Image (cartoon, rainbow, N blue to C red; front, side, top):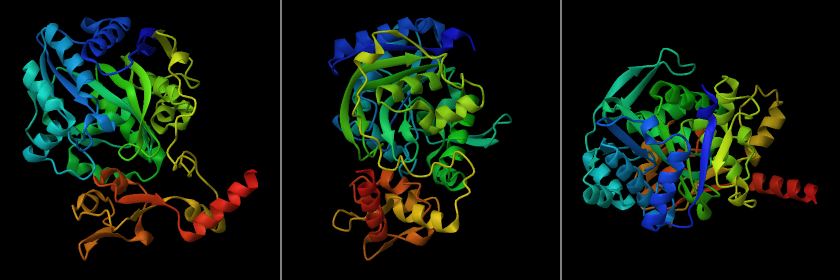
Length: 395
């Protein structure tokens, strides 16, 4: 890659007022080469935002509709045919009805209607070989991603209880058809392996341009149940790892703590020390949030290396680690958690979700999927006692 492909534009954007967002998105893309450097006139372009399972914009779960609108409008002005598409995660079944509901909740239906761009309601997908993949040699990819001449990823800056952070690289998981996602979690249970799979996917699909909504991010136990937190920026880049590196820095995270960034560095897709990531535009320091809340799962064993812990130490780690637990009063029996669980450890009993803790792999898919926030991340009684001991030892 050329040095320009490590550039990340950082442009201040105080809120979601339409003209301000448009100007920030336009400027950010211009700073990394201009739209014509990434897409051609007349091309069919997939705009791939972060949908998850559809949520009101103010909750900061999905890419804000004003950022989606700005990207789509610029592409239309450039003479492109635009389609917005995603395959929701979090246990959502990939049907026309679920897509319509999710698009509407996220504010994208109104964007599409006002601009005259297409929303994908088709549910087709195909097997796509990935011969260069290190973890995965075959993906099931949704049709609009395969039919596009170019892909523009429009991600959302959020923390993530499994992968520490979700951004440009992780957002591409949305082009994998929904029914395949639990299987991927079951196959790749360590953060390191899951991250390598995400890199395989990005290297297969090779998105053309990255734009990130970091005006309002999500902190804490994202990507669904965290809390909104202002960052105040729009980011753009040609390189998904470079963009995620800057996102991590805005969140005061060590970028190499993020599995996908570390995996890309290990492959030589970016400098091992990330020194080739350069920012242009507004000063990065202006937007860094020093007390950005990390996911509570961040300190759990990440699986980057081969641990040689004794069985007693492993037992302590397991006891200390957070695990999903169901709040029966909040549970609405929707079944999202049952559908998304990659190990089939969740069942509905007497109208409430029940988790078989002995077989739970702690991928936290159920926590991400639950629309009523009924699945909490908690420690066992022994784990809480151990946590108190650890906290006293720090004083």
